[in-house]
Length: 82
Length: 258
Ligand SMILES: NC(=O)c1ccc[n+]([C@@H]2O[C@H](COP(=O)([O-])OP(=O)(O)OC[C@H]3O[C@@H](n4cnc5c(N)ncnc54)[C@H](OP(=O)(O)O)[C@@H]3O)[C@@H](O)[C@H]2O)c1
Image (tube, rainbow over all chains, first blue to last red; front, side, top):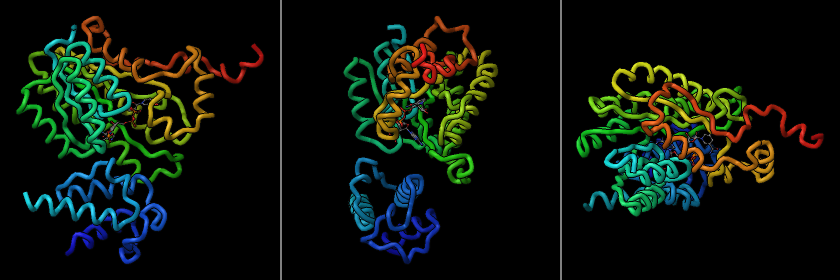
């Protein structure tokens, strides 16, 4: 499964939505009505899954779901390089 | 330097009240372990400021609501230092909802971070204090005994924390460990300014007999006292730091008539 697919699965499970409604352009808050607890739980679950850290200072910069996926993909690639 | 040579863990000390406590205890000579969860930059800044006071600082990331992460943090402390003198249970999180809107997810999240974490931290910390004694102080709020709007689940978790403080105080007394809590009313922090409107801040200020809001340093001062030998005979207590708010029922309401 791609990183994007895995993140979709995690987010959909936490917010209780069908993962097909998660698009790169969509916003977790506005479009799928995730509240702040959903978001922090999704971040933590993704961190645990990929063994990376996503500080709030970075997460606050995400404009949409695609930014979130891109960030995780970058961190995973960096980790694999090491 | 009453705390010279001591080692203190302050959970959630990158910012807010935890940061103020960490700096206060560092200024009294204690080395500090700065625990954080989401804000690494803030934690690293706090560690730098601690080191500028001439003591050592160690930054450890751990979600205290996750027992495995909490264990990893204590494993690191055990391997690196082998002991602990002071545990400040400050980290807290929560969901602002009315009681009827609290679901299982919100309940578990809040209870695990605010109450269960202290149980697990205290169990691990007590082992690291074995044979040397120590201090444990939890930070709680007026919401444990009074009803605040949308504060239900956090207030309940703080009530559990205060009860746990009493039980631990008695069980750990023979080991020379003093356990207490500090309960604050609304404390002027960046986080609070973000969550509540200025109008409400003004109301809180007006309802505080001491004439201003509580600031993080007010809480830190009382924590430092509870960590001192002068406080040796205080056990299992929750000390209220609220500028008189909780004993001045209806003060704000009757202001015009006085
Ligand atoms: N502010 C008030 O009005 C007030 C009043 C009474 C009592 N209190 C109590 O005082 C304490 C500190 O409050 P504050 O206002 O300073 O809070 P804050 O500004 O919201 O900061 C919360 C702190 O806790 C940490 N934290 C949150 N969840 C965590 C977790 N799962 N694991 C580890 N750390 C975690 C945060 O770390 P990151 O930043 O790294 O995420 C941050 O350092 C809390 O116990 C709070 O209930 C506050």
